[in-house]
Length: 509
Ligand code: ADP
Image (cartoon, rainbow, N blue to C red):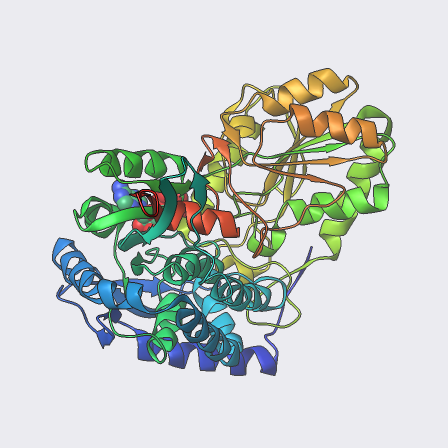
């Protein structure tokens, strides 16, 4: 890992622009088409994780703000649902174009508040955000029912009906992509939305919603900020919220399911992962080495639910592959997320850094475990001002250890040599999670065997890509319920089905 030393001029200018935007959006939410300070008098600070500087603030919304935003969304609902699908489609396409025009500044602001590097994460994430809006804009007329032959006298058809007000709660790790994944299908299907941002990264999302207001009728897309118990919970519990879509930790996902259960409302929950990444001895090792690094999601400092954090490498190639992965780490540059040359940024917060350090300390204290690379913060004093942590591989951790079982959400993976395929599959499946899983092999039969046996919702062979528009995404077990990003998931999760039978009799009878 090489470190950034002096910031480039380019990074300094970009940082200044992002800070100006953060300042302008500070202390604001958007309700009923209006940018407002909200009803609360309280706010919380937003920090730049790369240096600990306070860059802005956001309203600390509570139940009153939630009620205000839900009322606005409910008021906008009948009119938005009545807009013909083709017209909704055109509006969402226009919104996507306007977001595209601002994509670079949205990416810069997101880098400033998340610590994700612009070159490797937020710029691409902003493109994905635009793409998701375009994709679901095209789906706005696709919430179709079906017809079923019953008898000669009866005509049965189903209609898909928008659910109404959707409550969306997102995390901080990829807020641009999360905002699009929640908003675009919900709006395309004719719903209105109240979205709660994550407390660590609210500002870029407010900017996205501000742009959407240029095109969408007031109240269709609303955004509030605040803490989980204070703002997220009343949103999920609000009686007028008829669907909750959540991405975050499994523990909070379970709580959200409880809140929604009391009012019998469906929930989509995209939760954590502890994903196996298995390398066969016959794999193309160039691909596998790159895939291990990409799988660790270092462009988000490992803060990704699909990160491949349990790496199983066949014993015959174990040392060779590890040496090459460690060499790759050495080539990636850590530094100011707004610097074009930076590939790896900072963890989101002091709290997240402490969590990562806690797990690494636990590994250090485990008899037989060894830190092969990383395991600490970088030495560069400039980076010590922020929440940077070196990419870390740990060997010799028993599969029962929390280091192997918990989602750490940092640039930390365990590596394990294996020889018996049945045993490695059993170990891969011995996890409370079931989100992503990857196999590297040239043996097609082996790949099909893996696909059949692995317990995961998002399975890849010889690649370790991220989710995108049109690729159905979601997990099993503690990784969640429901799917996102596919046309079917839009219809399934953001509409309900009404069955209609017309008994039209027989002509002339
Ligand atoms: P992470 O560990 O990634 O921060 P969390 O699950 O804690 O994930 O948070 C994800 C989102 O859920 C955030 O917007 C947070 O404010 C919200 N949240 C946290 N606790 C609750 C809760 N009890 N009810 C509703 N939302 C919550």
